[in-house]
Every structure is written in C-alpha cells, then in structure tokens.
Image (cartoon, rainbow, N blue to C red; front, side):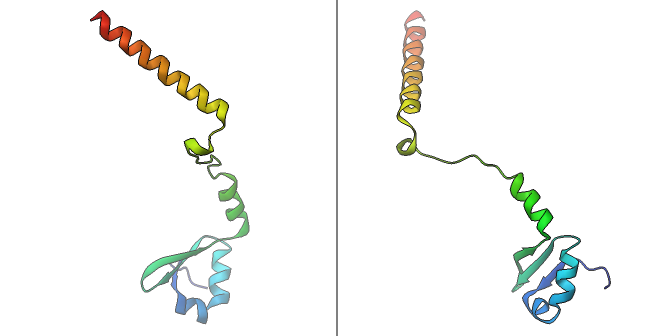
Length: 91
C-alpha cells in the first residue's frame, strides 16, 4: 500500500476498509465526513497508552464537595478576609 496522508473520507472507509485498518495499525488515521475530521482510528496499544496518560482529576462543585473540605475552604476564606481587614486598618 502506498504511503498516504492518513486521512480518508467516510466513502473511502466504505470502499477501502481493509487498507485503512491496516494503515491504522501503524499510525492514527483520520476519517472525515463532508471534509471535516470526525473520527480517528488507532491501534489498541496507542489507545491504551492515551487512556493511561489521561488526566484523572474529577470536576466537582461546592454541592459535591465533602463537608470537611468545604469547612476547610470556608475557614481559609475567613482567615484571608480577617488578615486583609487587619492590613487595611494598619494603613
């Protein structure tokens, strides 16, 4: 198979799926639809490596924050506000 750009249309995928899959075993392949990138095919090792290096941090809100952490956060805010008031009075 000749070297390609690694980008194929969904029509190409229908016609040349075997060749495209074979290429995706060596490097990621982009599948476009209406000239816009829509999918990426990659081998399972690359996929697992990407998943393993993904950011595992969770996003939360004050409503989902544990009470103990919320209290600690509130205490820190109050301490900062108190120190700012003290600083302002000294000026």
